[in-house]
Length: 339
Ligand code: NAD
Ligand code: WQD
Image 1 (spheres, protein in one colour):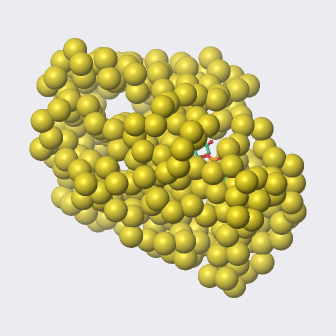
Image 2 (cartoon, helix red, strand yellow):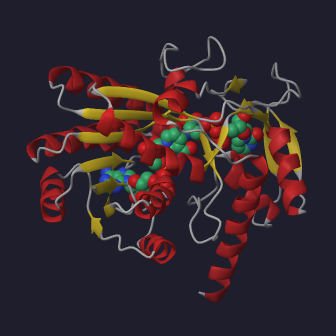
């Protein structure tokens, strides 16, 4: 299939490009490079041995999208493009609604104009809000606790309306839990600008000496060791989930599907620190600190629906997540030394 990846130069998009190219799909990346760089495209091409043309454009530009879809004969879209920093979304909600919601509206409009009606969308477990029960299945009530989460919910609702109005659509909403890790080559991974918000990139930078210590946000939660529990999923498993979703959409006789992508297994912050230190033989100094506003104690998936309908299951464990994150951190340092 010819597939357009919006946000394809980003963390999840680049790993998914490698996975889709390995299955023989022809890809085109549409990205405004607001949180990525064009070098990533070259690295995806070098890992996969396939070409990955980049259209530098913004998803709010419907004409640009129509042009890219027509030029490349696009048949399906995997939509990663979006802003994702929770704190930033609280400080500047207008930018988040504009980029994420208005951008997705422009995208689905352009797709309809080009008669491209297969869409996989990057949603998030954040749409479950404060868990009412665990594990979280796809029927758990949804709510949002910050503007970023609200953009995901609004987009999900918009997509449900579009699917209801025109059953020719095949829309797959993927609710990711906590994606971590990197490609084994160390050539692509997660390298946020500035100080990371997420745990794994923070741990990597502390281990690599770029940051002095990790603040563990809260040690008094109702969890086995008092620190927050999350469902960390290896980026290569997550990437494979997109290929599985595209395959299922082609076969399923319904316009809208929602799937959790998680492992079903929760680990605490201290579990993550201990695993990272053990697997990589490094030290991750940390300090127990106050809770971070808006955090929940525990969050993990029921991955049963994805297993049943996508034949997808995460196969990589914590050790592989920690090892590949460290490989990427060291490779990044080597690249910067050479540059
Ligand atoms: P990322 O920032 O690495 O990638 C997003 C890409 O989209 C970047 O390359 C950026 O330049 C591009 N982009 C942003 N706005 C754009 C626009 N208006 N037009 C064109 N390109 C634009 O983020 P990621 O971690 O790869 O996340 C991808 C998607 O998955 C996002 O929608 C995010 O909300 C969602 N998600 C991420 C996580 C996570 O923990 N990483 C969890 C759940 C959901
Ligand atoms: C994980 C655990 C923290 C950093 C966020 C978004 C969510 C989704 C994924 C996009 C928590 C603890 C973290 C640190 C710490 N993104 N922590 N010290 O909060 O589960 O989810 O990213 O959709 O929307 O909210 O992930 O990696 O930030 O935190 O102790 O420096 O690590 O308190 O328990 P989170 P995270």
